[in-house]
Length: 304
Image (cartoon, rainbow, N blue to C red):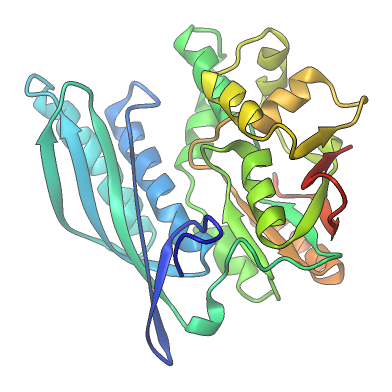
């Protein structure tokens, strides 16, 4: 499995019972606290394995940092990453460091799955329902936090949401007949939903009112506190997304907002989706049914 449909990780079939999943991700700090930064970056890196239906087992640190970065900050970043990998049931087996003016951290992750368990972002079927497992708005809230505008409780929710593994969602969903899956990261909700619809030769109809949002995300969007990546995502998706007149600009901005360590987006039959959502809600209260897939007409995404 390679580049054809922008899947979240590469997959190599070792034998009839084992497939190797490999992914890598790295980015500069999104929060000031080194330990939280390490947790978030690691959760983000691990997410691609869950999106492919696998279980992470091995991780290697990739770490760039300036020579004058205090040792306690270096230790904090690595400790945060180490603990998040351990929470995933995997182990850190080494890594590589590079001197760089701007800190950057992430993981190269190897996971495994039975070949029949592998999920792609292009297997959705007409009539499938879409379930999103984490709330949106991390890019907007991070932008607001840099300006000192977020309330402490809102910022805490932001950090813990980004640092949360997608392990629980993946384990709960493993018993359901999921047709397609992807995780929501830098291309924003609509970007990743579009990849799924496009790869499946379908259109996704999104219920904008059903989308779970982080506290204050839409409020800040109304104030124009939008990261540059959201505008890039909007531009890239031009001609592929149709927004109905009833969708506010702020709500649209949240849907284009680039996410850090976002949730999983599942496509599966409606009757199974209702059952899965009920199970997800016990552990992940923000999980919601956010749309469905239908035959392609003119746009890959239609937002109501």
